[in-house]
Image 1 (cartoon, one colour):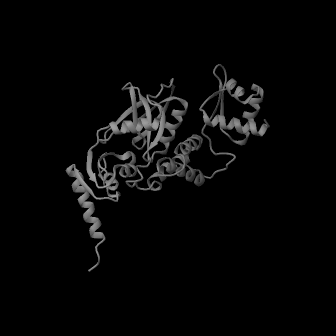
Image 2: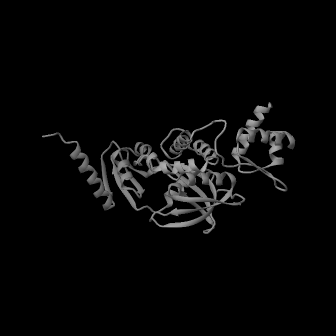
Length: 321
């Protein structure tokens, strides 16, 4: 391995983990401690903010700095990159949310404080208003990247969590994984106060902070984190259990509704649909998008809401006198 290739691999290792013991880093690179120190010196001369700890347990870590050499990003460029990656992680993008989140965490951890503040000031205007099909975007970039890094480093994290009723409570957790389900980001974590697994909507998390205390990760009680979150969502009581009969085969309706509701056949040409939701907008969109006759049975709030939608759409599409 050439010196240049080795130094790039060293930089990648430092970005992928918060702290590396020097002996382990040298072993991964296949070099002596002396060569490792020379390579660290080379990166520091380029401007990378690498700190070294001496003595037992000593090692190296990449710390926040004043620039991102050798990319030489301006404040405008750094802010644009982070906001773009943020939109990928929480929006309906075809790109990998996991890859975007990982890249964003690596960039944000070395951003100067002034650029982080600038990103926070932009979030109110940079994140588009959510639509029923797009879900709810994440606006707290600092909390999102803090959670991602804590998952990576198996480090205890604390945050303020806003519940469905609007109340805010302090939570302390062992973070396990961040997943995207139906265009929302969820944190899977072991809640220390409740001694149980919990899922948290990331858009309701604020003021996340790492405690510096690491933990031995527990195995998740499911093989697939995404399916685990979906199962937890289905098990939660919803405000509006919307019920309808649809004049179309169950197989076709099930393919269109996907994970948003349950579909049971009545006969070959009709089926029952149930959508448990906290948003009547979303239920109305799902049912209205079905190209088939529909009869909505309840609850009364859903019937009234969909009638109002129908009146507005009818009024807006009438021929002028």
